[in-house]
Image (cartoon, rainbow, N blue to C red; front, side, top):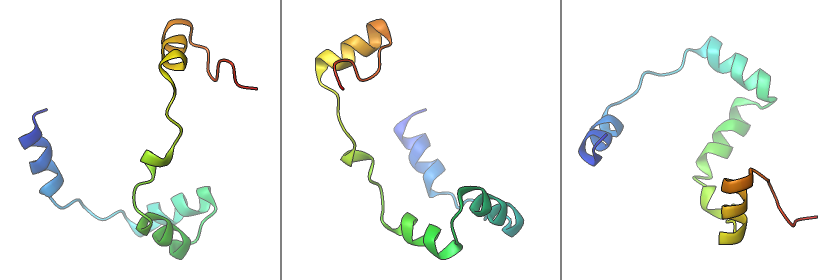
Length: 71
């Protein structure tokens, strides 16, 4: 996918999730609609997660060992 294709896809409005599906989802995750909306409004937090060192990255890729050296 090109950057232009991705931007066009993001620009399109998506269909709203049916209320019954949203209620089922919220029940499954144990949140109210207000809690969910507040959580979404916090914005992306993916950049706050731990970033592995190069040694940990290579170890994971080569040996598929998670958290090598962490106790």
